[in-house]
Image 1 (cartoon, rainbow, N blue to C red):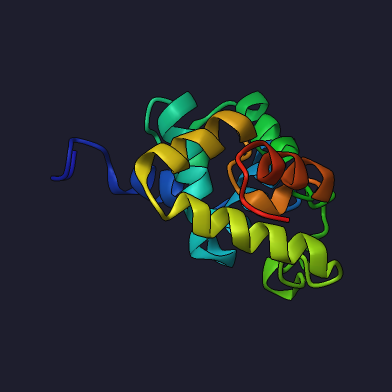
Image 2: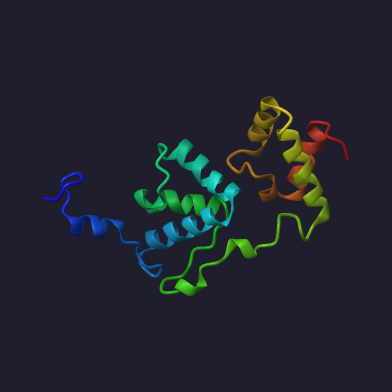
Length: 155
């Protein structure tokens, strides 16, 4: 056995190899989450918060069951690449900024994000209202308007 935890080098290599996108459903879910994490700092934090809160702080998606990964993907509307379609993995960087197609939604998102930055209590109020999906851009315009009206954040 080699140094480094008593695991032979061949076993370490096998453990470190990244599976092809076209593999099992779990492989494709892991790839979708890793692609999502790389898309932005906010996306990386969303996965980190989810892993901390629901997965015991283990942030490596490959170490979780497919069901947990699938739930996250559904929660954040992440597309799952079909089997054998490595080139079809979406680039989240190509997605237009939140609210780009809806100026009213963009205004509400900006208002709620600014509100959250005014203090810990405001951040918690938004979190209680929003549930698991903390990013205001992932809520409907109607839901955002409801929050703005409820807390008197203006028109």
